[in-house]
Image 1 (cartoon, rainbow, N blue to C red):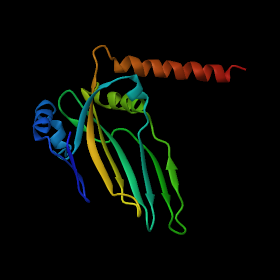
Image 2: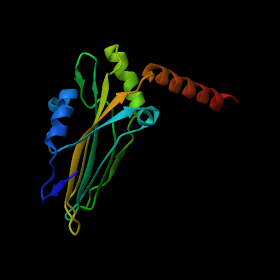
Image 3: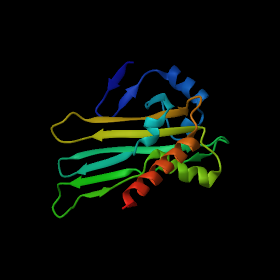
Length: 179
């Protein structure tokens, strides 16, 4: 795919692919996707469900580097549940008296357990909205953003995977407390 790089943003040229994606997944425009975004579709599997999203920010007089990793769920009725996963967070700064912060997040599977309990339904799709930005002095300017739509494959039973994770945790606690 042809990319035109400018100082401000990476532009995509393939408008036809974008239009086809929006026809297939109309919720993308509600989430703010444009022709300038990188849009992909992938299969939802156990590896993705075990992932804990991470966001970071490095800040300072010559540093401006950050990444966002937001996850949304699209329910069967078309409702979008935005940012349903609590992402981990890492902040560092080189300004005086500015301490760093770190927060552990939750896995997508843990967030889905809560989401399914709240909505009594498994989502039809998960959408990862991501952005990477680096405007650090001495480096080439970089800003990329996009959406990855995750569609559960045939035979993927999210409720069964959640139950298996709960059972594994229970047996681990039983082993740790068996003196």
